[in-house]
Amino acid sequence: MSAFASLPPMRTRADHSTYSALTEGKSQHGRIVRELGLAIVRGELQPGDKLPPEARLLERYEISRPVLREAVRVLVAKGLVMSRQRAGAIVRPRNEWHLLDPDVLYWLIHAQPQREFVRTLLEVRRIFEPAAAALAARAASDEQLVAIAAAYEGMESATTAGELLEPDLAFHRRIAEATGNDLLAYIGNMLSLALRESIILSSQLPNTHELSLPRHKAILTALQARDSFGARQATMVQLEETGDDLSTVLAADGRVNLA
Image (cartoon, rainbow, N blue to C red; front, side):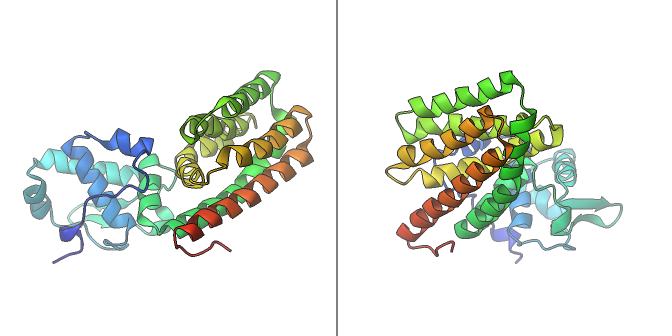
């Protein structure tokens, strides 16, 4: 029996993840895409493997052939499989997956061990965010700086970790938008899903609000001063301390430290 045949239900890492709420009530078509996508991302279907035979999938999901073929087309669009006439749908190499696609990114987050997800995300953030902040300090319009400051004020007025989440995400997203570079803005927006999971994890610390505000304030102050170097440095400090926070949470949960 294939690994796919015994694929367990998807587990979410945070019950209050907004993405998991969005996936509830999806159509049968959505379920097929999700389960096949997870099987690929988890490695239950390896690059070069064919998807299970069409007849088996039709029987498993009790669907029509057009519905199944549309689901496969979605997986093709996400870069997970290629469809060849007479050969069927074949899993593509990992480096060809569209990792910033929201679904693929979500599956990747939940397929990885939590420690590996955190490490991967921090590596990406350390490359992306300091450079984006430095560019935003030079390129941001006055209106964009006001928008970043408004996001910070939303963080400041939050009274719970849950209230802190959305303005925190907006703060980072608006910095990416303020670079004036559409591709950087897109990357910043796509990273929001992974960043959300990271913030939810770090918010398990009892003093998350007190820890978060000074770090973000330092970034905002440098942006407002049009200090490119200062914005870069403040962002690097924020990420270093965020890594320490996440290590503390993972260690308290009995998991391996990030260091």
